[in-house]
Image (cartoon, rainbow, N blue to C red; front, side):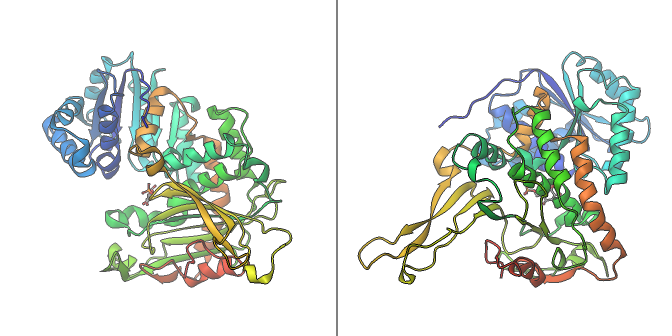
Length: 492
Ligand code: BG6
């Protein structure tokens, strides 16, 4: 099986926040991978921008370490690393004052005819100031695009302010709001599954689907990001963007074409159709949790407050919700959503459970008939399983057994699964916005999240504790079991 490399136009990628975690863990390794795949044009250049007064050589050393740490040794050669590092430049500039901007402007003068990608790998508070300076220095010209990381704001009001600030400088068609979940291979495959097969779409509705579960579970804690995380929490960090985007792709109507605005129009309709959560303090609808010390990967791990180095915090590291979509296709079908840190495993799944057969023709001795289930595994071990009822082989009468049709992408395709950032950064260069969030989508997602945040803020009740290495607070298990259903992993 081969992968196809489609050339992209010549570009310069300017990364603000170039010495930070995202640049080191994701952006530099992603661009390196595309370089070894032969996809970067000869002249492609990457300019790192950060406040620190590094020399060009210091930045190259930092990039070299990033590649050595985040690209497996078997996937790189010394020559490839040197060729990639030769593409890098560094400029020390401050987002909030003029230092360094003349140097950056002069450097970019030579690249004006290429695609200029400004990647803001910084906190959202800097998106406005950086864009404003890009505009003032004549860098937001028609070949320039801006990429912003999530979170865009921390509620509807602040998101609107951030979007206004970016929008004063760049038109919407040149703003790329990244949600890296949309770049994941299996998430793309969800589109192929739904719209390139005739099999599922006729069944993809409330008449045939009992419920949907979306789980994004992480086994890691907040690691070195406690400072940011404590101001966000799981609802803002994961649900407002990644999980709602997954829900949109599962629930949207078939778009007429796969172009950016047609797809985003359909996703937006889903967000608008989300039923307001109602009483966010009722454990019937929402459960928030925070991990205490426990065990993960066989060893003891500290609780959230210890990782944060604080006495108290009401930030949730876990959230489970019961969502509903008010339209003809989905009326009455619950979507159970759940995400958390320091859970029992790192696993992200979308589970579609179909309705039971209307009538059993089998004797009780055949055993129960379990509902069909389609499990789309986003990570790890990307793949799909379709659970079907079959006859247990051999004599002994008709006994039924549930078995999966199991497709592992690694086995089926035998190619390396590219990281989401590899695809997404090059989509920006290609000018393809399909996998990026439009302003109205971000704001519609916040509009659904805001009342939950407000209710929590007013409430004296703290998040429910759970032990690190488990599946979250027991109330999250009750949230689904109350409806006579169960989380896919058993959840106990
Ligand atoms: C990020 C969140 O957007 O996604 C992190 O800010 C989270 O808190 C990460 O750990 C998960 O991404 P992935 O690709 O590892 O599932």
